[in-house]
Amino acid sequence: MNRILIAEDEERIASFVEKGLRAGGFTTTVAADGDTALAYAVTGGFDLMLLDIGLPGRDGFTVLRELREARVTLPVVVLTARDSVRDTVAGLEGGADDWITKPFRFEELLARVRLRLRTAARAPEVTVLRSGDLSLDLRTRRARASERTVDLTAREFVLLELFLRHPGQVLSREQILSHVWGYDFDPGSNIVDVYVRALRKKLGAARLETVRGMGYRMP
Image (cartoon, rainbow, N blue to C red; front, side, top):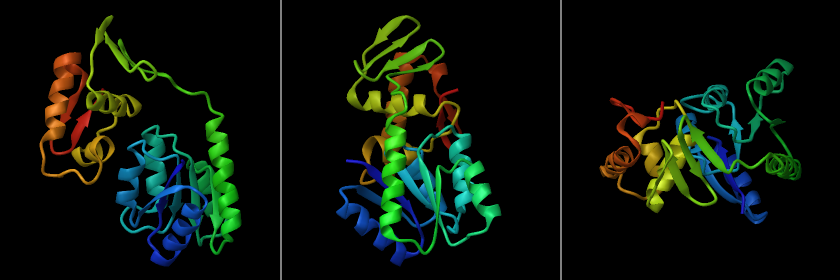
């Protein structure tokens, strides 16, 4: 079942799109501002994002730019009331995969979503993630560091995969919690720090950097 992130601050539109997509068999999550949308999008937990340009906080252009700068390849379909050629070109050149102008017919939106999902599905599947002499095989769920096999727990595997998919990017504790444990996990817990320490012990301390006041990063 495909997972769609709906970044839309107008509740009426978000509800309309969400109901239609769920009726079509999709799983949906709504983010009502740009900061939340970006935090969700970088987790790797979605197959496509519908992105409104006029979001509070980070606007849609900023969200899109930061996603692509972080090398997140999540397909993005922009939804906007802006219909100028300049805005359309800016969005597409900024990394959007498609552009739909409001108001729109849901049938057209659904067709665009399915097309982008099919296109993304045809991309070569990555089965081994690498960073230097560190590798993680997604099929066998085995890690290797400096030519030695490293045994990981299920949570450690998901955490390492998250870092390897976002090399060089600072991941906040909240982003890590949302991806590895889900948003229902206590945000005041120190569980992220505990698991990062465990990975450092197994892989080597230098493989995960602490960025004070922000989170962790795999250099």
